[in-house]
Image 1 (cartoon, rainbow, N blue to C red):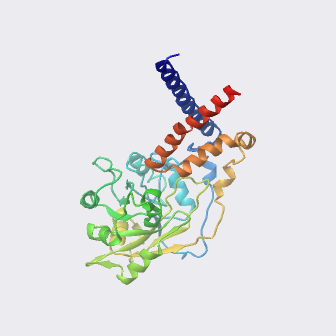
Image 2: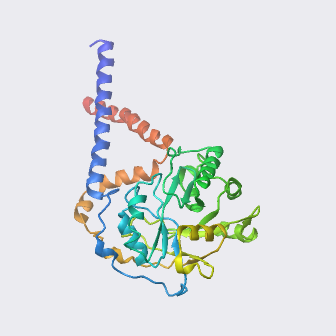
Length: 353
């Protein structure tokens, strides 16, 4: 064989290795998707929402709102009607629908108001980016393109101004959760400061999100500022950020401190006025409890199959945990290619023996 033949043969071997690695990764990922159920939304049965949960620590005559919720229009697991039922079941008298970068289910949700007069349904929009999440409360549509993943300060301020021009109350979402994301931890993205957000026009902060995310620093700052910023009242609020009711449960309620006469007929404008005037009080309980919907969840599905295919699932889970940036993904690919060299040498050694 000539040198060119040897080079051609080696290139062919490398190509076969590359194709084999692609097939190897694809096969692992296919098994992971089929067996683990990761990312699959399981239909929520309506009977799962037939319960009543009223925490004893909440004032009996309080008016409570959830400022953050999702449906199937984005990454939530519930239909618009199920979202309504879930909030009624968990002792909310009002809630805001805030799907990520879409108002797709707003009209369908608002159409349910007459059927469920015991809860006030408020339209909204979650302006979702890599560096910042904002809830625009009280708008039925966002007539602008979806935001970029890493908006500039100017773009963030512009979005807040546009939302307020549409009549929205602007809530800064889960600061601590966002700052904990890998790309913000690494410094690739930078969350705006609380002071910047207030200068840009934000009206309040979500100081409790889901079951775990609390923001004591924001509460401390709000107390230092006496819940005011340059002549404006700033409110503290909470959001369940409900996605999957099988695994999530409410840990916080925002009480609207309504004026005499407001309680008899609470409207969206009533809620917006209370928020803008800083008339809120937050109630929280982070003690673990299993949500009532959990009994309708079947975690044992495919358990034996998962055990048998554990190495395949573990390979993908490990990659998902580690390769969270473009550089780390590139590292994975590079090492798969570099691995060709020792494997090829091993085969050559075996051929000589």
